[in-house]
Image 1 (cartoon, rainbow, N blue to C red):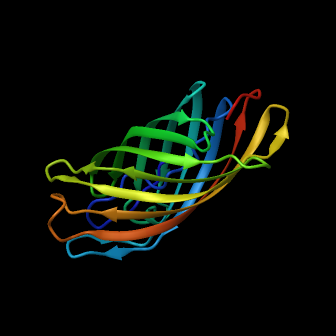
Image 2 (tube, rainbow, N blue to C red):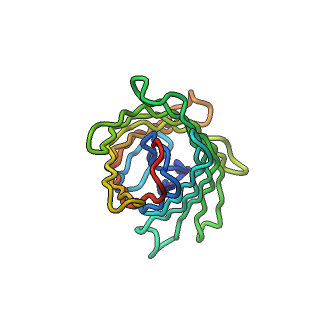
Length: 217
């Protein structure tokens, strides 16, 4: 799912990996929430914020899935409501050989009502994971997310982090989903050289369920 980061200037449009490298059994639905401390750079300021959203994933084939997500910053609702939407493709390159290597890429949009602003982003990344006994999967990954602010410039973001997911079987065709993830964020100046970088981190929790008959995750 996509989450929002409230910046005084330009936000990272997408929060967290929210992808442990596995494919959904068939359809997967989850809710995500997290907190992110603020940060101050020479030119950019990032406010403390919380984030929340929903994610839907659908398997397209043995090695590919599509994810659609939407999120908002609860702390913005009594001020200037802010939200984000995302469309992402996820693919598996290696399957437990000896780790799973997956890639992701997509488009996102960020809006803030009172500011009447709309920004656009693209993102791409990779995730390494390994399925352990008990349907536990530790994972780590990295993602780049340039964000375009119309009338201004493109601001690149680097995101990195990891976590662990657990998918216990609830019935023959349903598995639960619980994941905890820590992520770091590095925002660069528009030209990658001008001072103004900001660095922060955050924690997220994801809860949901995946549905379908057994196939290789």
